[in-house]
Image (cartoon, rainbow, N blue to C red; front, side, top):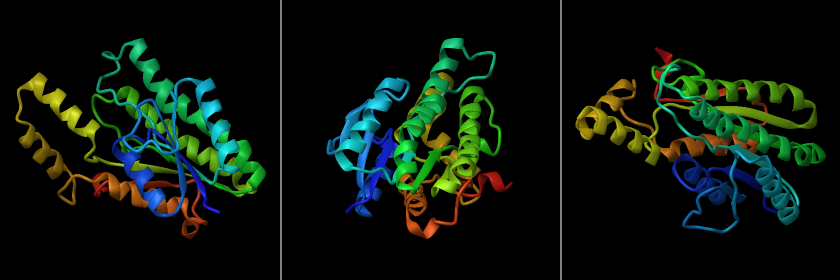
Length: 243
């Protein structure tokens, strides 16, 4: 019987790469996202900010597949703004999706995993759980919260055979990355290729990370070879936070 994984925000970027990799590794993967992917097998439309929708989606997975072995809490939104430039509405949106959405997902899935006495929870945090970055007040805060969530959940559920870890990517070349560069260039008049080159130069390894590289780390944490790893922050950032 195939193992079963849930990936939130699996229709694009890192989430899409995670869905593809876990399927390659033999998992039955359910993608929870507000946007339908090109590949709609086991896709469930779900707004992660809506607890009722998340609860219903997880219940559907449990009923259809009979178990939940892995949860990858990947769905999230980015916001580039200082504290003073962050409106209450924008702040709430980041918390609703990045933090509350992850809580809703784990809260719904944990009873199934506890009954199984097994499971791997993988929270998509960020290098911003390790270091601060300018113009990133709400996003930075949300990703630090996910790192804390992984640690406390790992301790609380170790006795149930459940592991929890946070993956902390640095700068990864996703559609959101290119959208952020485009918005910056529109405001500043900078050349996109020069900005991309400058971002690559900021990384000690001299390049931007790829979604498939993050997916490979997620696949490791989802598998049995990582069975002694829990409560950890797994940094994948080309050396950025080592400085």
